Length: 251
Image 1 (cartoon, rainbow, N blue to C red):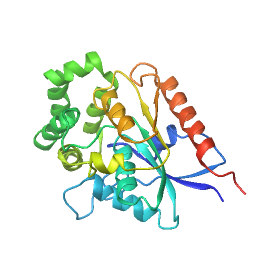
Image 2: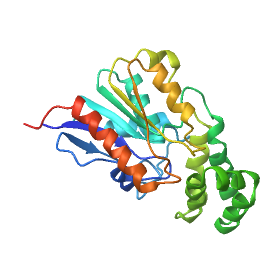
Image 3: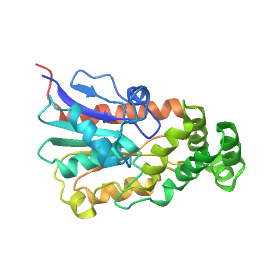
């Protein structure tokens, strides 16, 4: 029986994003769900949107797996860390790709997401896109983190962007739901993947988590902003190496 791995997408991503970063392996069964408001998953009645809320949805999806590795990209990494801290009896390992949160609510790196969310809630999509791109934050991202800028501007192209902006605003302002003490108490294998030229996922987040989780392995991969194909290849390779060491062979 293959090892189950919950591998969640980032904010604004979907199962295709998760698949693009997942290696071909016979040792693990990847489970990915689209979080509320993502792809065809409805927003639902619960408010505010939060990492703990999305983590509960993901845990429900793992009902058939008593124990599993938890992982994900960006917001998905935060979901995985939340599950490891709150359900240590079920999570046997961690894969955190470009984490964007450590222990604090509304970290500074979430400010661009909050800004584009505010624009999308009060302006038509094209006007919001132009206002963000022409503003100080947009100009800074164009220079230093163009991949982040492209993702943020892409939120204007989503169906009903003003409604999705509610998800963006809540997640950007919310808490990851974990404490340093809880993270330092983890006793499980952990892979943390970082890259440069990334304002939303600063390397400092990955370094902080790598220092806090006992025995965590920190891997630096090619910047997604500069070498997208190589970035994905190196992410997949790092995950494959981790799975080879920490999953059972298929029976």
